[in-house]
Image (tube, rainbow, N blue to C red; front, side, top):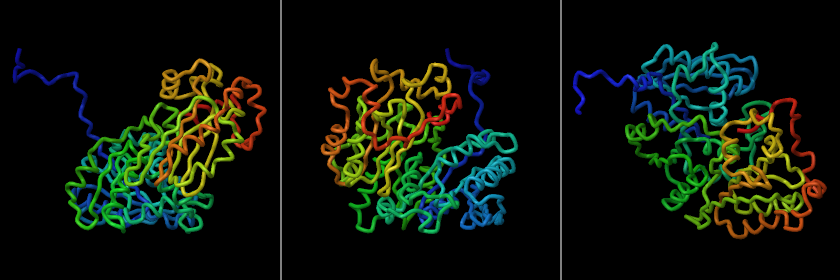
Length: 428
């Protein structure tokens, strides 16, 4: 029966979301990121751009700038009690966003991050640091995290072995991050990637960079932008109003534990780019794995994931490589080694992922590693890692024997005491 034109609106329809929209713009190369910001302002004169100059943060000062397409609205020096980026986020960035959202509820916001800030840190602050007792997400809607990548400098950035402190651009006195770490984390957390301009060697190399970005962050939407001739309206439609951000998805190192893909398995080269995902159930022999750490990273630009060592069967060990440096760290206990009383401390997504993939013998323990590089040999990489797994004879010896294996990683991955109730803080 046709609906009467006088019939009331559907009472069950959800109310319209009238909160201002926030787009977070990051990128390690400021020229490209500024160019993207200018284009978005040109496309929408009502958009409010917020950025912070943190070059003086270690001296306790930050410069805040707010502008629209019509001109400058604020340019103010902010004194901070502590010289660090986390303090800047808590003490000025979030309050500024809240203030602007309240004062201009009909205008969307664009937050342009300083080049050394990782978007995941902003997401964590938005989720856990209320402003005057009010969650920031009550006042505005986070639309997407956009990372702008300069095609001319991307490969050099990914291959760099420099650290921020050596370059004099560290965000705090205890900031020991590598340049490549910052670049890959900005790329991997993005919902949208904007590849800006052309590579120095021409169209083929630019195409190769596009493939590389798709392998580094297959969950992100890739937008290629001609840096010399930008259609501001078209770019704005592709970067804003996309609602791509999904706050329930954890950061990249926790994705695999929560059941999300860590990468795509594309062993056949595309413009020379190879992506390999290694998964296995049985544990690594610690000494054999330690002996091949350098070998497995030949021609690799980025690797990430988690693993378990036979000698430390309770411990989830995270793994990430960029810029020539490998980082491994504890990330709590496997659920198979966690008393039932503590399962409630672990996120729902991880418990569901473990239940769907539970093994009668291994429980939720497994290896999940992704490798992305140029011209790497996927078969050789897989053989090398497979040789590091326990053999059938070693498996048959049982867990008591595994704990006595020679372990170069002994005491490297301490676990919190279960009475601390901290498992949920390190596991998604």
